[in-house]
Length: 493
Image (cartoon, rainbow, N blue to C red; front, side, top):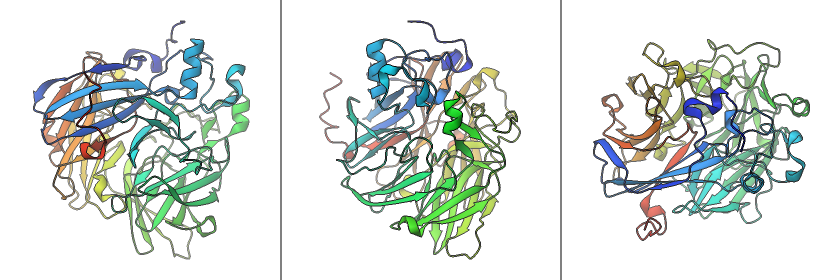
């Protein structure tokens, strides 16, 4: 096999791991793992199996590898497996890369024409007894929740009519429904969006189709008790650029942002589009509505956050404008006006927002996110693929305005936190946060466990991994009682 190129996304801590592993009973370096934690924390990361076909690529195009941390009786076991997508299997059989540029089919090897290009590397979500590995350019891939064996692409028993499926579905904590959507739903670079409601049993029970004002990356969306909101942000999806071998996605600093507001069980004819000034947003922390007035909390930056997606007007990446701060967008679904309001909620520069998901779609108090604090010491090698140094874990109390953060240290960075409720408690924020720490000086990783209401005090336990987990994207917690066979699992014997 030829070597990976000497590029930042393939060197240092970003060097592909290419490891599948079972590690039984991880070492606890500090503190104690709370015995009340019983379940599995799933997390996914891009990790290319082979060097890029065309000599370079972007970080987001790595093959998906899912990690699971199994918690039981104060012990943590670790397992990770590649997701056997059609792409992964074809390239493993050929012993080389066969797919070309990110979200661009025009430069693939002829032998893989017609195969799905998804990498299943963005999120891993559990619903209706199924574990989904997700990438927004393709349908979900089903995995065994205990062994991580790949079962293959899943179309909801023939009900899925779109060609794609979101990496950010929302599970309604009251109804058990999974609220989902698909952008470029009819094919590469189209402005078509499909919207789905999936029952607690896993059946699609509602579907609506609409067209966005322009084709773009619609990475996440917002859901309230009565509405769904589709943010159209000007990371343009341009197949003409793709045909010329340029980046399929590019930033347009002149386009307005649109919010498509649709009733939860509405049709495409019911959508209303509200517009605002040019800005960047990607991930939704939470959203809720009070009557027709809708509140959407999301980190917003004045400019493009992704240096690997160029400015279509030729401008260079502006790091001073790539500073996301938690912002509340406010829109009235029944207003005669077509604009929306923006209110800055935090001075933290941060992304990867999470909440206590028992309070999704409702007024809430506690928000968590990764924070970059440039006043603290950090080694230049700590920059992520997006150029950030996520060196702190932040907690924002939206009721009191209190902010707290914990610094991971000058030779480490953090990956996205995930909230775990304390068993038996219904109080918002009463639980734990799980976050992977990248230990750059040791070229390995730790799993950190925090009291979610005392983040500034640091982790209550540090669980040591003897291997490195390449920086990843999203993850989720599933309690043991929701996973059939958890207690009887013999796959570790």
